[in-house]
Image 1 (tube, rainbow, N blue to C red):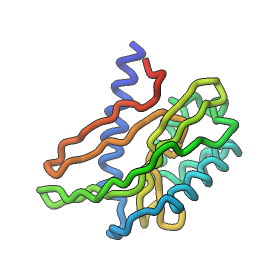
Image 2: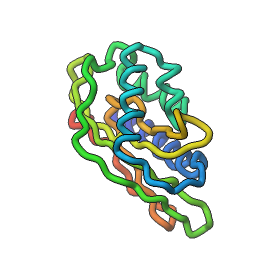
Image 3: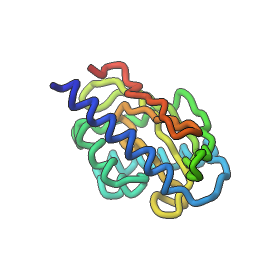
Image 4: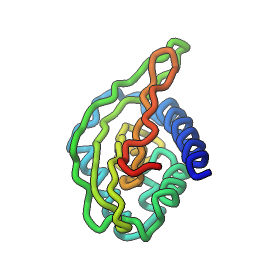
Length: 171
């Protein structure tokens, strides 16, 4: 039963991530730098450690998705005591869909750590330019950086290459 709920949650997150990326961009295809993405991650860490869910979710492209990830990741008692380590970074380019839409690109920071419940995590923290949400024109997907979620990558035909989870302990 737990696996079924995880699959349903992943499908919801994939759909939400795709819709956020399609509609939240600001039309600016300027690359998000590592420094900009790291700055947003540092702000997310500060808000999470303050247990300020509202401010944390204000950094997200989707407040509702952020709130769900917070609960799924263990709520306030699971917030890591230490900031995550950035183990990799890569760019996702903007994808122009055949039907005329576009999926906003941005910078992915792959972060690792151990949450306050002792569970190791690896999460893809995706930062993109946004005029409607976030901080200083930037917003994030997987702002709950200890959630263990990956980023779906969309193709020109609209199909999605999914990352069900990047965390090592997903059942």
